[in-house]
Length: 193
Ligand SMILES: N[C@@H](CCC(=O)N[C@@H](CS)C(=O)NCC(=O)O)C(=O)O
Image (cartoon, rainbow, N blue to C red; front, side, top):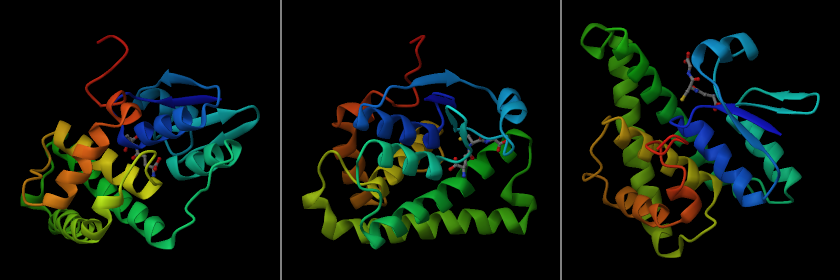
């Protein structure tokens, strides 16, 4: 299997962790925006090639990897919802980040203000949802928890949020940071560093 992506992408990170957890043979191919636009219809990373199969989204990649690895894929509906909520917040945060690079900010767009509000509300909800689960959180972690962790870690790396106001999410990230597969895929770590 060939996973195309960048070392900083939180979506790619989640797929890399799942691939490591299953022990399936794979190769990560560093792919930039220009290459992904030419090689995948969505023009986004990650995308995965497995023989003839092309998968263009981290969700289908995760399902494929878990199924091939004989691991359960979202057996719990609340965990699935957390995964989707974290992905919604992450999509909005990446969107704001990339637009800001082009000089477009919420100051001039009501839609982008809504994106900001969406991220805050998702964070608040995830923080509440995590409180009762915290004592039982342990490796290898669910896909919902891994997605929240990949989102938070990326957002902190890019200085998109301060986590102090979300103590349960902070505790979740601390636990994940002690998990070797999570720690080894931090966005600051690329093959050249
Ligand atoms: N729904 C996609 C989102 C992937 C995504 O947004 N990837 C970003 C990198 S972190 C990207 O390639 N963005 C390129 C662009 O928006 O032009 C997934 O889950 O794989």
